[in-house]
Length: 201
Ligand code: GLN
Image (cartoon, rainbow, N blue to C red; front, side):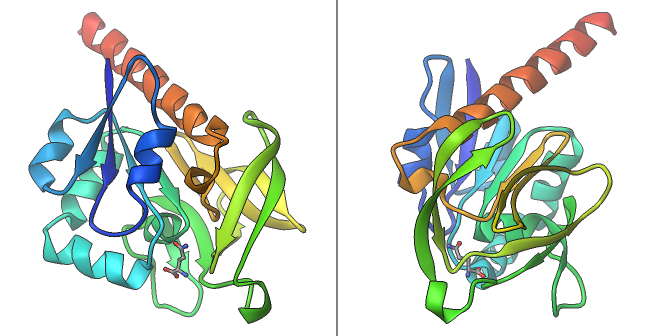
Protein backbone atom coordinates (compact mmCIF):
# COMPACT_ATOMS: atom_id res chain seq x y z
CA UNK A 1 0.00 0.00 0.00
CA UNK A 2 1.04 3.57 -0.56
CA UNK A 3 -0.15 6.37 1.69
CA UNK A 4 -1.09 9.75 0.26
CA UNK A 5 -2.12 12.66 2.44
CA UNK A 6 -4.34 15.63 1.66
CA UNK A 7 -3.36 18.71 3.64
CA UNK A 8 -6.61 19.61 5.39
CA UNK A 9 -6.04 23.06 6.82
CA UNK A 10 -8.50 24.66 4.40
CA UNK A 11 -10.15 24.07 1.05
CA UNK A 12 -11.64 21.18 -0.93
CA UNK A 13 -10.33 18.09 0.85
CA UNK A 14 -13.05 15.47 0.40
CA UNK A 15 -12.99 15.77 -3.39
CA UNK A 16 -9.25 15.09 -3.50
CA UNK A 17 -9.68 12.06 -1.27
CA UNK A 18 -12.19 10.69 -3.78
CA UNK A 19 -10.03 11.35 -6.87
CA UNK A 20 -6.99 9.66 -5.29
CA UNK A 21 -8.77 6.35 -4.70
CA UNK A 22 -7.02 3.25 -6.06
CA UNK A 23 -6.78 -0.33 -4.77
CA UNK A 24 -3.23 0.17 -3.48
CA UNK A 25 -3.74 3.66 -2.06
CA UNK A 26 -4.66 4.67 1.45
CA UNK A 27 -5.66 8.33 1.63
CA UNK A 28 -5.09 10.28 4.84
CA UNK A 29 -6.61 13.61 5.83
CA UNK A 30 -3.68 15.55 7.28
CA UNK A 31 -4.27 17.98 10.12
CA UNK A 32 -1.18 17.50 12.26
CA UNK A 33 2.53 17.69 11.42
CA UNK A 34 3.21 14.26 13.01
CA UNK A 35 1.10 12.63 10.29
CA UNK A 36 3.59 13.58 7.56
CA UNK A 37 6.10 10.93 8.65
CA UNK A 38 3.95 8.02 7.46
CA UNK A 39 3.13 9.49 4.03
CA UNK A 40 4.59 8.66 0.62
CA UNK A 41 3.00 11.65 -1.12
CA UNK A 42 1.00 14.76 -0.31
CA UNK A 43 -1.64 16.97 -1.97
CA UNK A 44 -1.98 20.70 -1.28
CA UNK A 45 -5.60 21.55 -2.15
CA UNK A 46 -7.01 24.79 -3.51
CA UNK A 47 -8.67 27.37 -1.33
CA UNK A 48 -7.33 30.78 -0.50
CA UNK A 49 -3.55 30.94 -0.50
CA UNK A 50 -3.32 33.83 1.97
CA UNK A 51 -5.42 31.90 4.49
CA UNK A 52 -3.54 28.69 3.80
CA UNK A 53 -0.19 30.36 4.39
CA UNK A 54 -1.44 31.71 7.69
CA UNK A 55 -2.63 28.26 8.78
CA UNK A 56 0.56 26.53 7.59
CA UNK A 57 2.53 28.96 9.77
CA UNK A 58 0.16 28.77 12.73
CA UNK A 59 0.18 24.96 12.91
CA UNK A 60 3.94 24.61 12.43
CA UNK A 61 3.80 23.06 8.96
CA UNK A 62 6.21 25.42 7.19
CA UNK A 63 9.52 23.60 7.71
CA UNK A 64 8.06 20.08 7.85
CA UNK A 65 6.46 20.63 4.41
CA UNK A 66 9.74 21.88 2.97
CA UNK A 67 11.55 18.87 4.45
CA UNK A 68 8.92 16.51 3.05
CA UNK A 69 9.56 17.82 -0.47
CA UNK A 70 13.33 17.97 0.04
CA UNK A 71 13.27 14.29 0.98
CA UNK A 72 12.08 13.63 -2.59
CA UNK A 73 8.51 12.70 -1.66
CA UNK A 74 5.98 13.70 -4.31
CA UNK A 75 3.85 16.78 -3.74
CA UNK A 76 0.88 17.86 -5.86
CA UNK A 77 -0.50 21.41 -5.53
CA UNK A 78 -3.74 22.55 -7.12
CA UNK A 79 -4.68 26.21 -7.49
CA UNK A 80 -3.91 27.86 -4.11
CA UNK A 81 -1.72 24.79 -3.45
CA UNK A 82 0.31 25.66 -6.55
CA UNK A 83 0.76 29.20 -5.25
CA UNK A 84 2.22 27.83 -2.00
CA UNK A 85 4.75 25.75 -3.96
CA UNK A 86 6.05 28.49 -6.26
CA UNK A 87 9.54 29.95 -5.98
CA UNK A 88 8.18 33.38 -6.94
CA UNK A 89 4.81 35.11 -6.80
CA UNK A 90 4.31 38.09 -9.09
CA UNK A 91 4.12 41.35 -7.15
CA UNK A 92 5.46 39.82 -3.94
CA UNK A 93 9.05 39.84 -2.71
CA UNK A 94 9.29 36.03 -2.82
CA UNK A 95 7.30 32.82 -2.87
CA UNK A 96 6.10 30.96 0.22
CA UNK A 97 7.38 27.38 0.51
CA UNK A 98 9.50 27.89 -2.62
CA UNK A 99 9.51 24.22 -3.60
CA UNK A 100 9.20 24.50 -7.36
CA UNK A 101 11.13 26.66 -9.82
CA UNK A 102 8.29 28.71 -11.26
CA UNK A 103 6.73 32.14 -11.03
CA UNK A 104 2.97 32.39 -10.56
CA UNK A 105 0.45 35.16 -10.83
CA UNK A 106 -2.54 34.99 -8.52
CA UNK A 107 -6.09 35.60 -9.79
CA UNK A 108 -4.72 35.83 -13.29
CA UNK A 109 -7.96 35.58 -15.25
CA UNK A 110 -9.59 38.79 -14.00
CA UNK A 111 -13.17 39.33 -12.98
CA UNK A 112 -14.90 38.43 -16.23
CA UNK A 113 -13.52 34.92 -16.09
CA UNK A 114 -13.46 34.22 -12.39
CA UNK A 115 -14.59 30.67 -12.90
CA UNK A 116 -15.09 28.41 -15.89
CA UNK A 117 -14.79 24.83 -17.02
CA UNK A 118 -12.83 23.54 -19.97
CA UNK A 119 -11.10 20.48 -21.39
CA UNK A 120 -7.35 20.44 -21.78
CA UNK A 121 -4.64 18.37 -23.35
CA UNK A 122 -2.29 17.38 -20.54
CA UNK A 123 1.01 15.81 -21.55
CA UNK A 124 1.38 12.22 -20.23
CA UNK A 125 -2.14 12.41 -18.77
CA UNK A 126 -4.43 12.58 -21.78
CA UNK A 127 -6.68 14.48 -24.14
CA UNK A 128 -9.75 16.43 -23.04
CA UNK A 129 -8.90 16.35 -19.34
CA UNK A 130 -11.69 18.14 -17.49
CA UNK A 131 -10.58 21.24 -15.64
CA UNK A 132 -12.43 23.70 -13.42
CA UNK A 133 -10.80 27.10 -12.95
CA UNK A 134 -11.82 29.20 -9.94
CA UNK A 135 -10.07 32.55 -9.42
CA UNK A 136 -7.12 30.64 -10.77
CA UNK A 137 -3.45 31.54 -10.86
CA UNK A 138 -1.25 31.13 -13.94
CA UNK A 139 2.30 29.90 -14.16
CA UNK A 140 4.05 32.89 -15.73
CA UNK A 141 7.55 31.46 -15.88
CA UNK A 142 9.36 28.16 -15.32
CA UNK A 143 12.97 27.13 -14.70
CA UNK A 144 14.75 24.70 -17.00
CA UNK A 145 14.09 21.70 -14.74
CA UNK A 146 10.36 22.21 -15.11
CA UNK A 147 8.33 20.34 -17.69
CA UNK A 148 5.22 22.16 -18.94
CA UNK A 149 2.32 19.67 -19.03
CA UNK A 150 -0.56 21.85 -20.15
CA UNK A 151 -1.40 25.25 -21.56
CA UNK A 152 -4.65 27.13 -21.85
CA UNK A 153 -4.76 29.87 -24.48
CA UNK A 154 -0.98 29.93 -24.58
CA UNK A 155 -0.54 30.24 -20.80
CA UNK A 156 0.93 27.52 -18.59
CA UNK A 157 -1.63 25.84 -16.33
CA UNK A 158 0.10 22.59 -15.34
CA UNK A 159 3.74 21.64 -14.80
CA UNK A 160 6.02 19.05 -13.25
CA UNK A 161 9.51 19.30 -11.80
CA UNK A 162 10.77 15.83 -10.91
CA UNK A 163 8.61 14.74 -7.94
CA UNK A 164 6.63 17.99 -7.82
CA UNK A 165 3.37 18.46 -9.71
CA UNK A 166 1.20 21.57 -9.91
CA UNK A 167 -1.85 22.82 -11.76
CA UNK A 168 -3.83 26.07 -11.70
CA UNK A 169 -7.21 24.38 -11.96
CA UNK A 170 -9.24 21.96 -9.84
CA UNK A 171 -9.22 18.45 -11.31
CA UNK A 172 -10.85 17.19 -8.10
CA UNK A 173 -14.08 19.03 -8.86
CA UNK A 174 -14.79 16.82 -11.87
CA UNK A 175 -15.46 13.11 -12.32
CA UNK A 176 -12.27 12.84 -14.38
CA UNK A 177 -9.64 11.37 -12.05
CA UNK A 178 -6.84 11.02 -14.64
CA UNK A 179 -4.75 13.90 -13.32
CA UNK A 180 -4.86 12.53 -9.76
CA UNK A 181 -4.11 9.04 -11.00
CA UNK A 182 -1.04 10.43 -12.76
CA UNK A 183 0.10 11.75 -9.37
CA UNK A 184 -0.68 8.39 -7.73
CA UNK A 185 1.61 6.78 -10.30
CA UNK A 186 4.35 9.32 -9.46
CA UNK A 187 4.03 8.29 -5.80
CA UNK A 188 4.20 4.57 -6.68
CA UNK A 189 7.35 5.13 -8.74
CA UNK A 190 8.96 7.27 -6.07
CA UNK A 191 8.27 4.63 -3.42
CA UNK A 192 9.74 1.88 -5.59
CA UNK A 193 12.89 3.94 -6.20
CA UNK A 194 13.28 4.60 -2.47
CA UNK A 195 12.80 0.91 -1.69
CA UNK A 196 15.41 -0.03 -4.33
CA UNK A 197 17.99 2.39 -3.01
CA UNK A 198 17.40 1.13 0.52
CA UNK A 199 17.88 -2.45 -0.61
CA UNK A 200 21.30 -1.53 -2.06
CA UNK A 201 22.63 0.12 1.10
N1 GLN B 1 -7.42 32.89 -5.86
C1 GLN B 1 -6.97 32.00 -4.85
C2 GLN B 1 -5.65 32.46 -4.23
O1 GLN B 1 -5.01 33.32 -4.75
C3 GLN B 1 -6.81 30.59 -5.36
C4 GLN B 1 -8.14 30.07 -5.78
C5 GLN B 1 -8.32 28.60 -5.69
O2 GLN B 1 -7.57 27.86 -5.03
N2 GLN B 1 -9.39 28.17 -6.27
O3 GLN B 1 -5.26 31.94 -3.23
